[in-house]
Amino acid sequence: MDARQIDAPWTDDRILEDVEADDKKMLENCWDRAKGHYFSHLKGAKYFMGETLNGVLAKLGVPLSIHGDPDEIDKKMAENRVKVEHRVDYPNDEAWRRGIYVYKNDELAAFISHPIVNTPRLNPSKASRIIQPGNNLVIWTNAHEVTKLFSPAAN
Image (cartoon, rainbow, N blue to C red; front, side, top):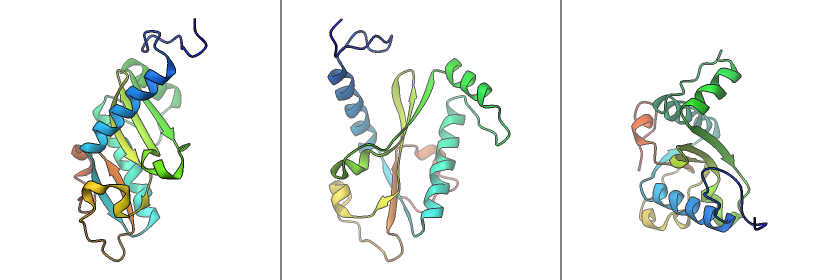
């Protein structure tokens, strides 16, 4: 096996560059459907991230409880073929890729970005939006159906 290949059932012996390219393509697809949720304080942004993740997991068959047993949660995730990754290791010019990735059957089901400073440069397709005072943080996500109940006005 080539040193750049990985032995995992979901990769079909593809090289890591192919896996990374597919992952980036899935994220760009999510990004195209993403909406921005704007916040004036980090506390509200973090709450939004947590509630969005809880809603996505519940929709995928992994409801969370504050008293939940971690082993049971892991078992439920394995049964439902759900994986969650928290990624932070991207350079500043790719800060938009930092966040929570939720996979179902090895396909990216949801992306929830970290709170980032709201600048038009981060998403040129939405650059015409006027930045209101106090709405200086934005979280981008494609999980619209679970954010409707607790989100500030989405872009």
